[in-house]
Image (tube, rainbow, N blue to C red; front, side, top):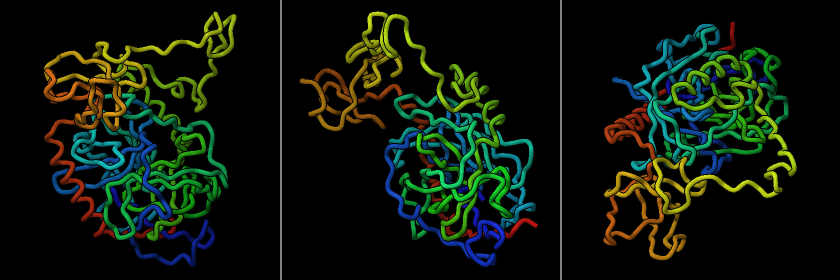
Amino acid sequence: MGGALLAFTLGASACSTGAGEPVGGTSQAIAGGTADITDRAVFELARETQDSGALCTATLIAPNLLLTARHCVSPGDGSDHVLCGDSMLGAPFPPSAFFATNDAHPGQSSPFFTAVDVRVPGQGVDTCGYDVALIILSENVPADVATPAIPRIDREVMPGEVYTAVGYGVNENGAHTNTRMERQGLSVACEPGSCGEGVESTEFRGDTGICSGDSGGPALDADGKVVGVVSRGAPDCATPIYGTVTAWQDFIIATATDAAKLGGYEPPFWVTTKSSDPPASPTPSGGSAGAGAGGAADAPSGASAGQPCAASSDCLDTLVCYASGSSAMGVCAATCQTTSDCSAGLACQSFGSASVCALPTGSGDDSKGCAVSAARAKASLLGVWLTALAASVTLLRRRSLTQRRKR
């Protein structure tokens, strides 16, 4: 199954799209979608094993935790057909098989992150109803690379609720464009438990536009919170089925707790409060909310440009920690697109996945620097990435998956 979106046929008594006959599979892009450079919490997830590779989509919900579909991390029964009640998923592939990037257009200079643990629900192994998984990364994704999305673990989706679909799926020709895409203004068709046959109580049916490679991708509500995980859909990229986040509240919270321990950070607020709404900030005594005792807003924390740093978290939010090739310690530097964005005497120079304002080449410093927060995987993984990409395209073109109603 890997990165292939599982096609299905809904019965006439369910949220039907037709007479309930099997439908052949074709690969199309997120219908009406546009290139997405803003949803940086959405990652392309690559799997590479000895004899296969595939691409999926995943969402960062904590600094070192990705939420995706179970069929993206576990092998199936070898059949090219998914039969609810019969198509079971095996134990996950080893963590070493997975790595991910959130680049809108993944390439050689993209930041890559590897996995240290893969977890799936223990309640069942059916593709239908249990298609959710969590991947703990071997390092935290720096805040300047991605801000985790909040999983809406406490409020179920409602019919007609508007959501946005995001994914790295193939285009209308079945070719992988290596671009993150999104489609806004979609609506939930039916809430969990009310969609009829072919959709389990832990799932809901969405709108349209989900294709091969979008598996594991999120449905984001109006506030950008994750409410669903892509499981499967019709072969014409219509009527997608999502695993609902609320159904796996305990599983997600338990795994996020362990991920926080491994990552050395305090668990996100939703882990301890079991609410997707951040706790209200207390109003300081003698002043308004967001102001100190004297009524003035708190000054931003962090080192300013040119001051020493060990990581980007040491700098102001608008800066990154940059280390030149001749220095073991970094300095806070502004990011840029052109030299005109930089202060006098500095030039906009690209180092890996970051462009920063630094001394021009030949000015006494060298150009062999990097953003400390880039956190790219070792160079040896680049060949694995390209191999996985080629293998997954072959896999996605070869497979045409269908599904019958649950008997």
